[in-house]
Amino acid sequence: MKRRHLGVGRYHGLGTWTVLCFAFLYLPIGILIVYSFNASSLAMTWTGFSLDWYAKVLRNDSIQFAAVNSLVIATISTLFATVIATAAALALVRGGRFAGQTASIGLVTLPLVVPEIVTAVAVLIFFAHLELNLGIGNVIIAHTTFCIPFAFMPIRARLVGMDTSLEQAARDLYSSEWQTFRYVTAPLLMPGILSGAMLSFVISLDDFIITLMVAPAGATTLPVYIYSMIRQGITPEVNAISSVFFAASVLLVSIYWLLSRRVMSVPKGSGANNMSGGSRT
Amino acid sequence: MISLPRNPRTRTWLGLAPAWLVIGVFMLVPIALMAVISFLEANPYGGVHFNFSTDAYVQIAFEYDLMDDLVFNPIYINIILRSVGLSVLATVVCLVIGFPVAYFITLQPPSRRNFYIYLITIPFWTNLLIRTFSWILILGRNGVIETPLLLTGIIDDSLGMMYTNGAITVGLAYSYLPLMILPIYASLERLDFRLVEAASDLYAHRLEIMTKVIIPLSMPGIVAGCMLVYIPSLGAFIAPDLLGGGKRLLLGSLVQLQFATARNWPFGAAIAMILLAFVVVALMIYAQSARKRARIEGDS
Image (cartoon, rainbow over all chains, first blue to last red):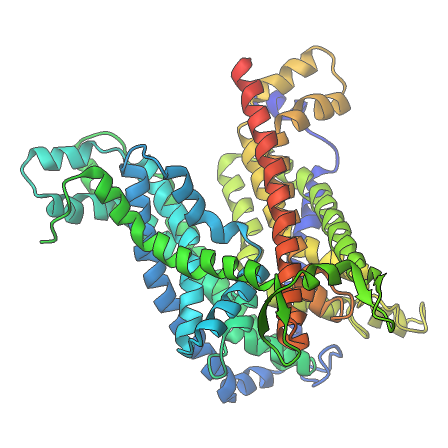
């Protein structure tokens, strides 16, 4: 049965095509990583294996300064964006239908729709007119804004799938509203919140164009610094820092992936064993 | 602890207030301000004069000649056309590469499907700048493609692959390919495979099954995927900048140039408004097609 099922819709060359597609997706990154171990200072001539470029990255103060900026900005923006997105998701999913609901969903997802370059220059104009110069603070404001939808989506997905019977049970058992939230809703929602936070962290860390336009001097992030390195000429040092950055992203995305699979497996119905659903490993 | 207001409406708005405040103040207001700026006069020393002027929009198609007469100037119109053209091209490339892959993944057992999707999403979440940079190593002078050809004497000079429309298109397609595959996969995954079997039982040819059953049923995913590739391609900055050498401008890089180097804010704002208009039109077409489909599905 199953074989026939697969046989009918099968087409020749699909597997080969898919392999080629994955090669297209991964070969460029693979080449970049391979050349980061190149001894030659000419990025594209292979002379031998070496870890010198990584050592150079480690000794480069500007890179470390930019990396610290990136991490600080991503951490603070993620905190803000996640709190704002959680409040918005709770209001939108649990608030029932109300006038302004569509507008509110549109607003929260607006940063996804507007092209990044448009957001970048609009915020640049805005900051320039206010003469707002909070250094790294300017970047944090901009990042918080566009991270909100990325934090919002997994949290809302989790909330939509969560059934309210456990919360109702807690209320029936005379727990206060705050206790219900603290001991029932929040733990159940946690995988959604964590994966939302993870997404916005990655998005903030990766952002380039908005930071390039908005960041004042001294608030350079890692992608902006890498861009200036590429501009100055391609050396394997760019490959090395890029490879490190790539590895960090893959790690974060993998954590997100594992978390989001838990987001999908929302405990349903009632029963004591489901109480531990949120923290199940 | 914290006591929340009793009224559910007040609560809903209390929950939404921070989102409205942040996105409203730091996104809606800036975009409105940008719209206003696009109708002001440029200050040659940067910034603007607060006089109403449509110069910025006029400048897109015309320029003043030595006699101070308006004459047609195709430079920016060409940039707009090239942006639309390359974005459409990149979308088509992504569709051609992506559709069979999404279909292949659908045919796999569920556990393996998840792993494939994970592999598709990884490049998407890694830094776009780094991914585009890697293409310089491939296409560039003495890059991975050229070096062996030069050494073996198949070619004697650089192929000049960099800084071309082709290089930009490859960069765009590479950037946004995952955004094509994911929605098509989401559509195909819900496809009722019995329809494919029924078509086969009724002697439909393989090609007919594909064109008359599978593709029409996955249309929502195809349309969504095309939108997700087309819209960011239109506003792309990194690919035209790194692979186009900053000389073959697209709308996105033109906007950046006006604010970073040329310092003509009203003109940059006007171009950004045009870009935004293109996006709004694309979204409206998308919403229209989604509504139409919902109606058809509602009828049947």
